[in-house]
Length: 153
Image 1 (tube, one colour):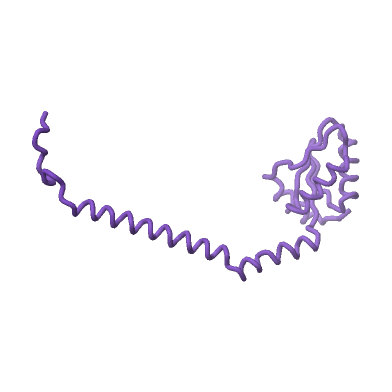
Image 2 (image 1 turned 60 degrees about the horizontal axis):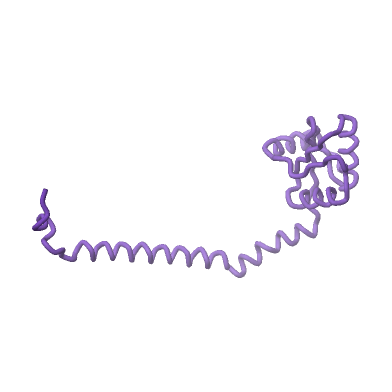
């Protein structure tokens, strides 16, 4: 279990304020599939909220400690049936996350598709403007400002 300083805990509580719970622990407790889901969420977000249903306060405290010991996480806050847990991402995921933007920059696939999209939008706007100019320049039967013959009130 990771120990946090009061300043770190305060900063994490502030960051977690607007989060919604991502995992719910119900009657089965810390089943292996629940632990795996919390593990995935911590790896993806680092800071998560967990909702616990149907337990008393002492049981929630024990569950928070068991969860943090199992996952190597830090308990940040426990309010009612909501637990806030933090753990830094594991190193292998960080390397993959850092390598992905480098590949993108090297390939410049995003830049090409954004440039292609912008070029297509410019072409469409120019074609539309050209068509409107042609329509305005083409004489209509009956003249432009004159009322058509045979149409009356």
